[in-house]
Length: 487
Image (tube, rainbow, N blue to C red):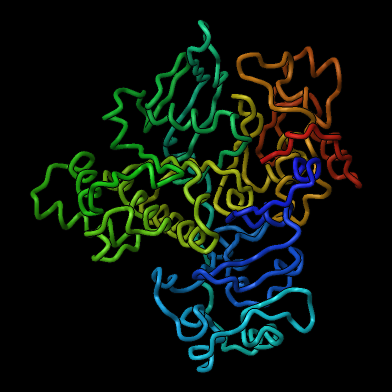
């Protein structure tokens, strides 16, 4: 956005993230099956949609404040038509809840709506609100699975104590994870958020045993890390991009079969084949998918394969590194519902890494916030997203203002995130902090403040004072360096 303003350059921004689209774009076009089905000013498209597909996309996004125990996500029903498949009428008609017979035979033109500046390729563009209101009520939305209470009588799934991780660079060591202590309780979803470069993926890979620690300890299921192969049965990881996580030369049956053979107990070929079918069914894959290679599957189907593979050894902990960020919001809703179902069915613990705070807030029982290789805040989700919270968390929440209507005015952090090779003295966040106390923050490392609602944050400001300034309106917006926006 800053470069566009400076250079006067027109930009075509392609994204699945509707929050970023809302923040950056002047106008929005919505594509479906190779056709432009809606186009117009961003505020109009996202708040007064005049095409059923756009409305379906908006309904797929986790609403700020909704959680997995109160609302199950509603993806667009059905599937996209196959590439090149001809549609005599509206391509979206087979998936549309208000479709009429004429929709299946008459291609709708992209025309300007009567009451707005937007254009829509829907025969009923000007009466959509009334038609949706009059449509037969859908079956009651199933209540999502409730948040799990902390089970103190059960041993934690993972206990990370004072972990340090260093990498060699330029003839010396760079500390990427600095004295991190964090617990993942059995059966809970712990969300982990922070900017790119804060150390989230390194942390997950260290827990998984892919990186050895340089200090501290990690206990999994009550036992210390041993070998990578030993960890594989207890703990698995789902990566952000299934295109690079799946072997493109193997069929889905071979991919799942290999995971069953390596991670599961000894079994015969017929037993292994049965287990592969069970895994496929658990992630809503059809039998014909098993004979395909990854390149023949959509992004959502590939991610289902990756998730199924992770469950091959019946793990107790699954690390999810941006598991749905590369997917459109409807497919994302399907994957998130699937993850919740599998977690409940298998009584799993998840570490969920994501930039999308609406997704993290929806899924997570607790949230941890990472900045420059340190955990700066951790606690129950409801406590972390409400004042008082760490000033960095405050900035992250304000950056998600498109999804969070209570976020207030956007806070733009001053400057770039410092390098882990040369972190600031005192509080690592003080060089960008909108609540900095000056010399004290620069010279003194803060201790954790603990609030009555069960969460801790690393800051010099006492909870009552921090709550007061964060609730004050209007919120002070920092003058931003050009590249300082929180992602």
